[in-house]
Image (cartoon, rainbow, N blue to C red):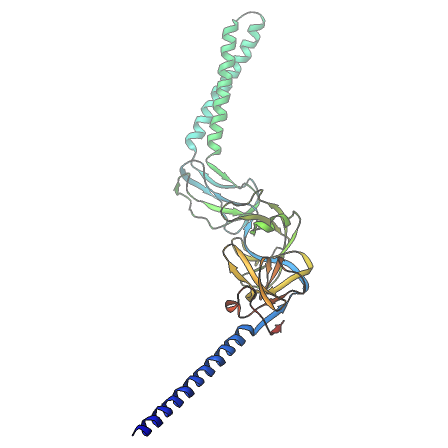
Length: 352
């Protein structure tokens, strides 16, 4: 019996020994494997090399008539004459709208009669003053009355002119909003008038490109529903950056007028600022955004190093690096979340 117990104990000890040996072997294997994985990080890399980069941006803008005015009368009244040919060209000074002014005309005639009488009195007294036939005070009073009537006539003519709406410049009339006989106020929109031979293009550029915009600069643009290329010349810029948007407003004059160019339409403007033949372009996925900064991982001596960079122009899949990298630097483009500073990189795949 005792012999059986000893044999049982020996078997149990052998089984336990075999179990611990196996566990130890697996643990050792896992450690070796983890250690191997820790060293060998398979990643993709990109070699930074200088390339040609045309500095250009695309912004949106809007077309506008070079001159455009909403036609409104200065005083309230009833329309007695209407000359607003919709869609037609009119010359500067053309009478477009006339309001009722019979009462003003009657007052003007009365003042003209008073002026004629006062002039005759003045002429007689001018002869009398030479021979001391009238006092200087009476003569001065006559001159005062004469000048007063002239001033009242000028005021009356100004009131009559306010009953007329004339074309402020050569242009095309839009759609009229009134009919003859309508009673209008000073806030009533009668119609609009726009220049038809000149169209301007207004757009905004980011602050950092403001110094690149110069008077006389040529810009190309397309309409939202057409790929046809049009041209314009910069004529002026706003002398200051908008504090809200940090953009600079630019105005250009279109040099290729066309019936497709309608004021108010949106346009896509292409701005070219020159070519940089030594630009450092890297894939956008290589950038690690940080709070207020941007970083990339550079492979140096088989280890990962985090480097702060500054970027410039962005293309479809690449972005320009202006500071932080040098030509021939190798940057990591994949597995960025699993790398730390000085992580070992045993091998990687070069991408283009």
